Structures are given as C-alpha cells and as structure tokens.
Length: 494
Image (tube, rainbow, N blue to C red; front, top):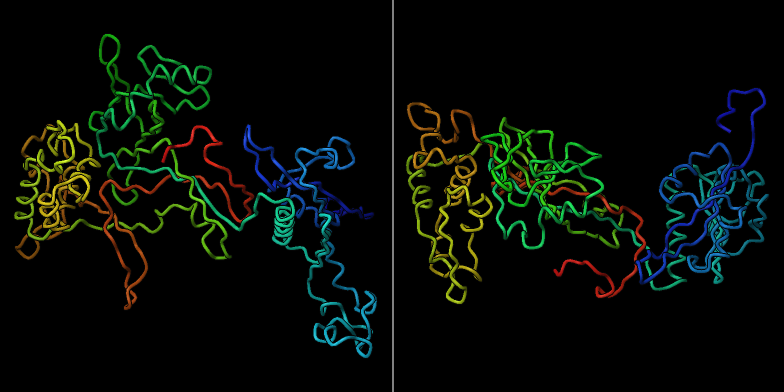
C-alpha cells in the first residue's frame, strides 16, 4: 500500500471499487436511468487506477450494504454485472503454470497463437502486458488486466457499458465527443438592443426578477446583481451599453438611469443574451462581445481514435491570426465606401416580401455592425436580383473597409468620418495599411490548411466574428438513447 511504502512492515492488501456506470440515460417523465454494476479490484499499489475511474464514473458506495445491491434495484439496473481485476504481476507467470499444453500436444491454432510451450521457463505472452475477457449471455463479464495503464481501466469499463447496452437494448454506447456552442458576436463599441434581437415580447426584466428572486439583489436604479457572483449584472431589456461613455444606461420609471461600465463585469439581458468587454488579442482596442443565451449541442458520434472527439469542444480561436487591414488606392477606396454609406436601401427587398419601414442609415447607432454585414451580403430569398448584382460587384476589400469604419464609427463624427482614417506615406506615395487615429487597424484571418508550396491558406473573417463560447459535454464515452422530440418539452422549434 503506497501510504506504508516507507514503513518497515508494509501493508499488503487489495482494494475494490463498486461502480454503476450509466448505460441508458434517464429522461424525466419518460424513462428511468439504467446502469450496470461493475466491481473493480486492484492491488493497493494500483489504488490510483481506482481513483482515476472513480473520478469519471463515480462511486456506487459500499458493496456490502444492502441499499447498494444492484439486484434489489430492479428499476435502475440493466441486469448485467461486471468484474475487473488489475493484476500486473501475472506477466511473470509461465505458460506451463497456466496449464497451456506442450508444443507436441498443441493444436495448429495453439501453435500459431503461441499458446503452448517448448521450454518450461517460457512466460505467458512473452512477459508482456495482456488482457483476458470472459462473458456470457446471462450478462456476466469478467476481465483480468495484467497492466497498470490508467487508460486500460477506463476503456474496459467502456467496453462493459457497450456490452450491457447491446444486451439491454434501446440504447447505445458510443466513441463520441460533443460540446455546447454559444454563438458570439463582436458588437463594436456601442450596443443598442432591438426588440427583434432581444425577444422583448417574451423576456422582460420583471419576469427575470421573478424567476431569479432568491439569487439576485434588486437595486433601486432598476438593475440587479447576482448574490453569489457580484460581477454578474442583470439589465433591463432596453439597456444600452457604450464603450465611448463607459456607461450602461436604460429608461427608468421616471428618468434615465445609468451605471459605470467596468471590464470585470458581465451583463445579462432578460433573454439570456450576455455582453462583456474584451480586449483584442493582438491589438490595443477594446470591444463589446455578445453571447447568445441558448447554445447548440454539437454531437460527434461513432468516432475513431484521432477523429476529432475532443477537437469539437475546443475553440477555433487558436487557428485565428491577426494582420493589417489593406486598402488599394486609399482616396478612391474611401469614395466607394462613402457611396455605400449614402445609398438608399429601401428598395432592396424582393416584391413578395412586405416592405419594411427601415429608414436607418448604415452609420446610424440604431444599426449594429452585424445588421450592416447582413444588409451588404447577397440573399436570393430576401433581396432583388438587381440589388444582389450590385452587391456582387463590390470588391471584397471595399466591403472590408466599410465594415471596419462602421466598427469604429462614432455619432459625433457626422459625415467627417474619413478624417479619422489614414495610411502611411511610403517612398512619397500613399501606403496600403489602414490606420485609425494614427494606429494600425488589425484584421482577423482564419488559417485553413496549406497550399501546395507550403504557405498558409488564409481567409478574412467577418468584422463581427468572435469564436463561439463552448462547454464540453462528452468525450470518448457516451451513453445515449433515442426518443421522439415530442416527448421532451422546452426544445427550440428549430
């Protein structure tokens, strides 16, 4: 036993762990959770192996207590029982000791597989690690592992879950990976929520206060603070956030209220939309980042080793690099951008789409950066052929410049926004790297593979792109069942 390794009289014993790994997940009101029972034994020197599998599958308690007897838990037991014995000392056993025949008495198959001996000192499996499994139709499975590798302990429980799922039916154990992905957006420096964005008709501040009554502290100004995490601030649905003023403001019962905007705070709207300040990874600029309150569960089933089980839960930000924003001919590019900003967009929709009252200018603070990108992106279903053709003829670098200017635009500039952007003079001629108030403007590029010559393949990202926020939900071992969507309430219609 490791704890007594320095003692003169060392303790020698075996340790065991009772596990009840899930085979079929439970669904409230539909299906009870089902699990098999696994008893795992190990010499005390390998007690850390049991600690490892316990951290993954939990501890089902003392196996000698009646309340932990799976046979008495008819509702939650699949009917299968497993036993795993870690016995690395077995690699020292000889073939003759294990009852294997002499070469002269062995069958052709035994000779082919090396399951016989010619020398009495021959070790089983040449003294290398091995695993032996015995299982039957009753649902009993016994495994002996002559190795101490942590992964084999976990993988054997995985195999027994799969065995139980196959016998029990209606469920499956998969080599899978998955994550909840919450889309994020670069909101620029000012965020003004719109009813369509924030679902105000379904989510409002009084409803939020009612739902979170016990866990928030309501302030007289009309906002709330999380009791357990004071940096989380709950805002009314019409609250506006401005980096320019470093303020969060909203319309109170009698007058407009506001609080100071701090980088350490996270702001939650009644719809679950989350906003916080974040500094660009490769520049000095700050921006507001918005995160949707509802994530998408991305499940990657039946995956081979190296197939990307864990990759699906990692951020794509590691493949994003930053570089300068380029312009072609600075003065001509600005003129094309000005024409885009001053165009009338009221006639862009197809005839079958009801004409919307949308008089917002592209540089209006009422229109977000994402809204401008959507407006300047072709859409066969929404926009007319003439308008789509006009969009197709706009060079990509002109659109990128327009989005960049929208990103930094402040209402106080009015029509003189061009005064805040420039390029250096190189050899007496205008350069090509865009500057905002004298500092270089950084753009983000996604690296996707390599060209034939070994150079990176780079793609310019949308100006409002931010990598999704992810929560890992599964990796390697996944127990699942399939039911009709009508059995589950609260699902997104999509």
